[in-house]
Length: 355
Image 1 (cartoon, rainbow, N blue to C red):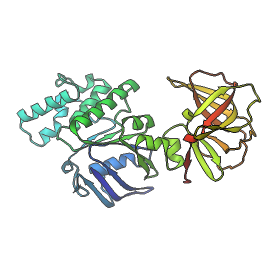
Image 2: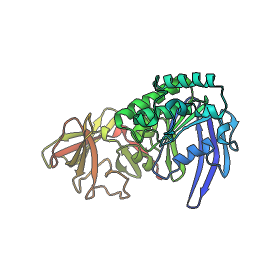
Image 3: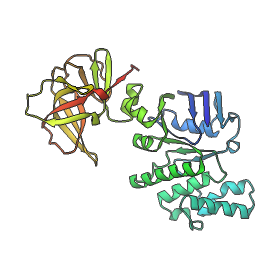
Image 4: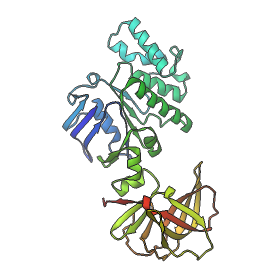
């Protein structure tokens, strides 16, 4: 378990203030824009940066003032930082040699680690002969050499292709399960964070905005920033509320132009909000097509005023302003200019507090 309490780190133009708790054997992703304090958090946990205030404990032990080598933490850097003049085995065993582990014991440990990361027989290979994914596995094996209780990963998959990213995510989950270690994973990718994590912590401006399960972060965000950062978002204003409607909760139907007037219909326990629109652009997503639709200007709505996709707008007008867009998924590609109705499942809409 990692406990960060009232930690502050000040820089000339930036300050990070943290309160965060990470459970034993969890995978927690830290997600946020550039400059929000993600890597700084890892460096504070590892001891590469010293906090100006507050405390950091690992498994109940206060490590705030301890140097990195005494914290029992493994760290995988974004650029791997492997030694190109050393073999794979020499890289993996570097920390063991520094700690004067007897050669026979070190060699056994190196073989165990290479087998663990599926690189058995790679010990004599040079780093330059490896693929990006293989180098990443070497970096992970090296970080595990001294049996850490915590593994910190700083955007570890940023330099590998998407297919390999998926394989490496599965590898990290397997290692966490087999070794029972806590993993903290920094990423810019919302898909990666939602896919790999038990919990996600979303950062903005050096603060933790929300921490929760991937489902909670996606479905029940606490601010419009979190809602937009973790996935495509549509917004509807109803009275004083701003409601989040995800594209997958908007059914797209083709219609004759001018036959939709913006109405609500009973739909089981919830309501359907029907909006007239026109397809503006289409993006193929693999499993479906994401349609960006322009709402008809001035379309009246009785349930709420459509605010569109992206960041929530401040206007509370009961009609759609010019240039308002909604996003919806559909199994087929519809041509730009097609008249459609957007049927929003308001039973799945989530009310957002104001930031």
